[in-house]
Length: 481
Image 1 (cartoon, rainbow, N blue to C red):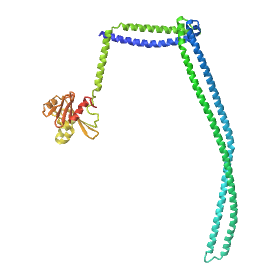
Image 2: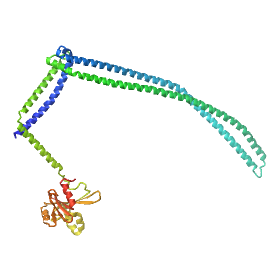
Image 3: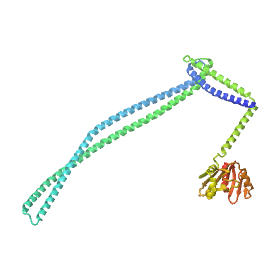
Image 4: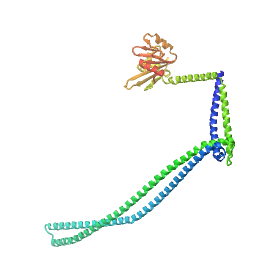
């Protein structure tokens, strides 16, 4: 069993190598950062080394590019500030212009309201005159009717002449009053016309001012939108410039890295940050230690017996394959409740022990034979099986297909083994044993015209029509849901 120890030892070495690799990657990143920081602070000292001339030239070019980008950013920010000032000025001018127009609109609005009030007064006066004219005409008609009724009286009243003279005098005064009312109506109509003209003029002036206000507001809002778009465009340009500035700064890192490594190798520290050199040396020592540890682990792995390692890998692979096959068999085998088809609609389970305790199994076959036979169904046709003595449970299930056809499935769970029942069925000449290939090794028999028996479990029988028994066998084998 030494190959197991060898394999476990190799796995332990692999884990340690992986951990060392992760730690080494982390330490290399820290070393790179420390060397970049050292190179950034020690640029002035790098001028003393001719071999770093190319890095210094590259840094100067990148710094010049950064200056240009920074100048462009400053110009863009100045432009944004100027545009914001223009927006504020535009907002102030808009407020002043709208306030001036509103002040012009206020007296016009008052004039319009006064003209509207005057028109309403004139219309009320005209309506009053019209009403009085109609009342005068109605009074004239009423007096004329009274006079006609008076002359129509038979016999005539004694004061006919006096009453007639009174009515006639009253009628004589009506035309003069009506003429005055007509003149008043003409004056009221002229007043209404003049009031309407004044109202129309006031509304026209007010409408012109309101249109001017709307036009002025629209112009200022259009100008503000343009300025806002300019600000947004300038902000996007500033963002792009800052991104470019950061990119240039990152492009300086390789030069800083070369300078920092050279200064660390020469032991030169910048005067303003001498701790950076010690930090770089400490990171370099950590990286060297991890590299040495990784080399030691690789050497230990190279000394492992390859033959024993292959044996270990083959054993592990074999165990995994066997485990996969076992899991496949376990998961593909039917569960404990998968005795009936999935599309089962109704299930009836008869507990023989409960029937025997209630003494129903003895009374019903004699007292109600039809009820008992209808209850157990095809289970009564199994030879060598006495119900309920030899059965623990009888399960009957019904399914209905799309065409409305009803199918019945029957399962019998025996109290003890089925060897006696199987032997009785085998000796029965009316049963014909089915082909083992048809039932995949499960014993089954068929009796004409329409009865079959199959053993689907250690103590379980499937009975009924051949097609239904075949389906129960397929369900039990896991070949059909």
